[in-house]
Length: 353
Ligand code: NAD
Ligand code: DAU
Image 1 (cartoon, helix red, strand yellow):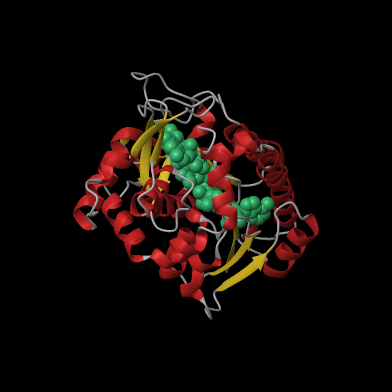
Image 2: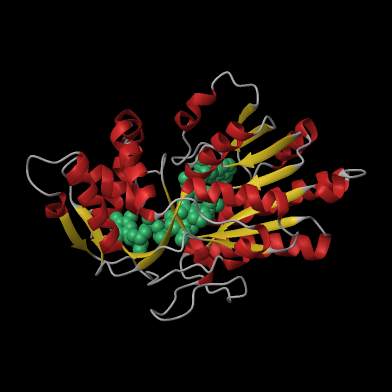
């Protein structure tokens, strides 16, 4: 048996592939274009492991998709591949439409053609799991109830609009064609291999380098943080037991302001790697806000708990401690991802703020 993972060299995808192969002998075909966000070093521990077949390629490449389905005949597709950073979607939305919308469309069509040709039990047990985000639901008022699965779609950024579009395509491929689709909408992840353009890893690597910690606006925006390994376990749970055509919200029951996230990271670094120049909080700077910045996200994760018995294993306290430790122990990984391209991004996003 084989599963096809897209985007398995990125942050969540690589954690998923590593966790999957730690628990199962089922082969993973990993299709990833290796954009700036894809990194084969994340998967270095799988070198020589025949259960992992890496294919460099683009999900918009229909010929390649047809060939992969024909050769490997996967029993499931786990679709992680996406452009994922909101700030990049503001400065350059085109890539988001191409990968998140056109790419998801191409993948759904390739999966549908493969599924149509399946026989016997293979057909009803086939699964297409579309990995999506809570950002499709838009922004919550401070006292509003958390997003449940029937919350209206109100995406506000080019990134979330492109993910919303892909969610709608996945839904339509189930309702119109009967493709056995599952969708997960997850809150903010953090943990190992997180590219340091996102809040938590950016704050850790900047603090360690003695650079400013740039908080957008007043820093009172709220996100619901989930340790990445818990997201991976939720995806495995939905794949195994989710009802086809359903969506499952996944979250950590952990709402925090950006300001308090940065304070927590600074306090952990003060304890684990104190700086000669004094507490890391000295590096905090408030910079110009993100255009269209969503104020609050919160996930109501009761459906996945009620129906499938999933709950996060990590609290934020345990998860963030492991994460800071991981960045302290993996300085070579950090140095490697801070290439010329990374420096160009930092200049483009932060110099005008
Ligand atoms: P990421 O940016 O770290 O990784 C994306 C991966 O997709 C990279 O390896 C990249 O090379 C690959 N990719 C990009 N375009 C491609 C293309 N056209 N063809 C093939 N591969 C391509 O993203 P992530 O944070 O790991 O997110 C993975 C998925 O989870 C995304 O769909 C994202 O929307 C969703 N998600 C992310 C979070 C989060 O907090 N990071 C939360 C909820 C949902
Ligand atoms: O909610 C799920 C989403 O979480 C995923 O779908 C996205 O792929 C993922 O990138 C993430 O989106 P966010 O925009 O919430 O994450 P980011 O880490 O970019 O920002 C988190 C918060 O921190 C947000 O309110 C913006 C703020 N921020 C971010 C950066 C990079 C800052 O204040 N300063 C920064 O330098």
